[in-house]
Image (tube, rainbow, N blue to C red; front, top):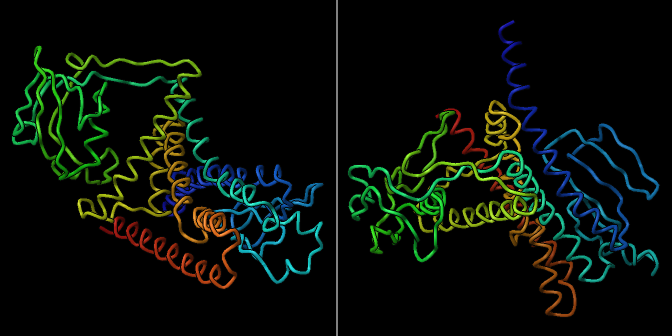
Length: 377
């Protein structure tokens, strides 16, 4: 009974939240492709959530097969004239189409229509993230604190730079800050990277150079992560913690800002990987996402939605990477076509797609290995 209860708890606590979040993100991404493709006059053969054998589905009046498949780790929209679900064009088959049929294929569509259809998937993910954040900000508001230092940790980068309790932080590297969270967000993705913080002390503005220390942080669930820390703390009395509320339009703006922070944070992390300031073991795969989904589920619906928004931005960014088989790889080919005035040859595309598939597969294996190492470590 204990094994059965533990299994049920694992399924309900981790697998179900993970699948719900993933299905939402995949559905929205593919719906972006579907809607713009339909508006562009391209015939769509299938809209699938998941891969592999079809579990349930139906065919609509436009001839599109909507289906839920057995392997719930992705999805696809298959266009008329595509060789497979990765939208690899079947040039040989295309030659057998009539002019009218060719106009309904993805490859026969005008260049801007193809580019818009491909870009619509990642854009839909960004829109979803903004919408989720906007809803959360509208309902719950946002907790903010003034960037005023209440305490400086002994031996920290801030102490060595001369930061004192009562200092008001006004800018970092020339970028103005208005809340304590602005400071935390900027510093956390810059371990061992020289920065300059401007502080207001009484009526004087001081520029204090420092280097955030690489620090391993453990969250409330026991997950470890490396962040940049300068060693300053605020509190209720000093920072004036308060709940900031937003109207609908303001909430959308804040949702866009929050999504942009995730984008810049991702690029900063990648830059730190290249320079060696951060380790690649923080790259996670499906196991880590499932774990995070379960952990957020214990905190309530709002926490799960926030995770979904973060993942939606991440999926949008990943798909825009210029790697063949991803949306960004298709857009790269279209950019070359726009310059050359003709598409990249079938042979070159085939080689590029094979290389791209190998790159994505290696990334998935590496991320999954990180997940397993985290579990057994």
